[in-house]
Image 1 (cartoon, rainbow, N blue to C red):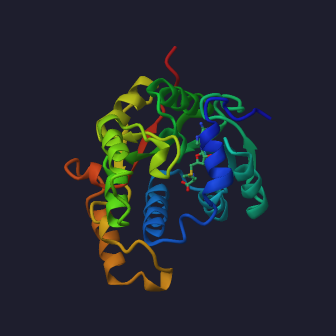
Image 2: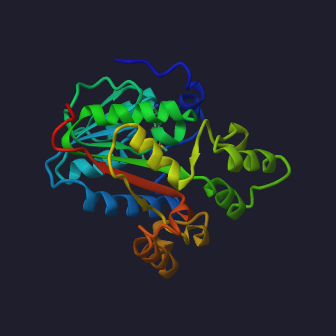
Image 3: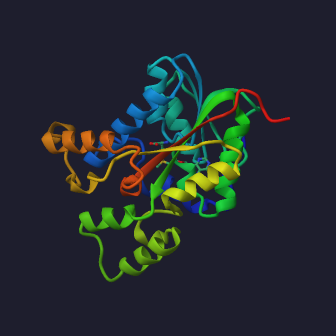
Length: 273
Ligand SMILES: C[S@@+](CC[C@H](N)C(=O)[O-])C[C@H]1O[C@@H](n2cnc3c(N)ncnc32)[C@H](O)[C@@H]1O
């Protein structure tokens, strides 16, 4: 079993000691919007079940469990040992190991689909993000699909403003992150990188992943959602935000307004010689 990368101790510490990831996608309207839209996109973009899905950065298995329930075979690789263990515990049909997206402990061309729904926004160095995408390409079979999530550059600002958490202490770090994309953990989040929409296209191409297509996940209206509230309170506003996200998902003029993008490429049927 490979060990967490020595350069990412803050990511491991954050998810082990600070933040509860297991129900993140259920406990807030924004989380439920992200989950609903991500799954809607994956349902349309993935091959029919049963496919072999490698869920890199799959965390405690929220999407992995959903994919397994849909009939796919799913293996999670995650940097955080507690996440891999939680995925195995919560979803016995899902297998999970500890590993780093940049050096996957997986043989080549084994997956029909490789997901990176997490690692790219925790790698601040572009060379590391491209390495993770190259690894995704290596472990995916010819004709298979690579799909990666990124956090948008402006999203932390929008999120903290709507939560009333921007003040003289947090504002300088937020402005710096807006300028450079690199998060200062003083914001309350951990080591992170926030993409501009064109950067992810460059990174896919640099990793040899052709013709990447980008989809806005939450759409431009997500900041209107209340910060807290249970699923029973997801009323007409939630439904309109969801509809708007679907309507505008490929509109280049509003792509960067989503808080996450999903970028997808299909590998050529045969590898270049
Ligand atoms: C916000 S969680 C997302 C979990 C899940 N994929 C989802 O979309 O809900 C980000 C996950 O990426 C994992 N991660 C971060 N950097 C990674 C890396 N270099 N290699 C593998 N996993 C990584 C974290 O441990 C965490 O489980």
